[in-house]
Image 1 (tube, rainbow, N blue to C red):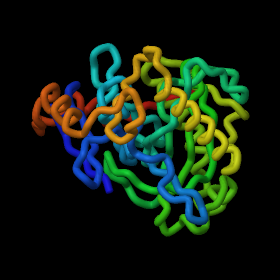
Image 2: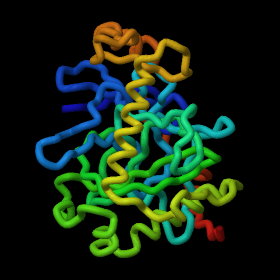
Image 3: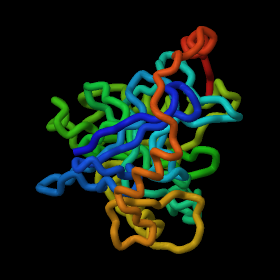
Length: 292
């Protein structure tokens, strides 16, 4: 139903990945792609894949840019990559977000006692395939971890692609330990230590780092979906781009033709570029031994 196209130079600060629907109209992965992929029987959710498993570039939905393309995060003017913290290499799952969700930075979550991180809710997909950046895949919900990142609530949903061979066997977090032993523990440790090589302290968690089950996770999705609904309805300036080509009753609605002109006039054509320098590649290959 969805396709992607790139603008800007690969491996640079102006690289962007935009989305089109089945009618070839520009859409926002934050606002225009439905949260629910299917509610016939078991509810499945749409996952926007930002980062394929084993890769290191910190790609994310650009919530402040028109039509919210995927771009690479930056820190102090440099492209951001995660380090290899022994024994892990890059991201250990397919990583992304659920559309039409938002962790409200003005809302103190009662479970974490911390405000939201101002982003769509994050997703770790634990299936057997490595998924492509920009893929929109139906996923089955299994559970959630409550990360406290820089003092903000940063929920991490745990899901599996709906058609993965293991999907029928995984119905809740305890099934993960049965069929994928060690993965939950590795997930907790990864999120705890991944910023340490960059000079940051270890991250903290609510619930002592334990994953909560599918029923609890579904409530968190419902809450962040309601927060997103309030976001797209409000009139005050939030700093986020809420332009949409599908929500016609929204004051931020933009016709597909106008949306196309807006993006094409502002973003340079795609250029594959030269790839990473040898120095950058060598730095990314380093293994960091850290202790939280």
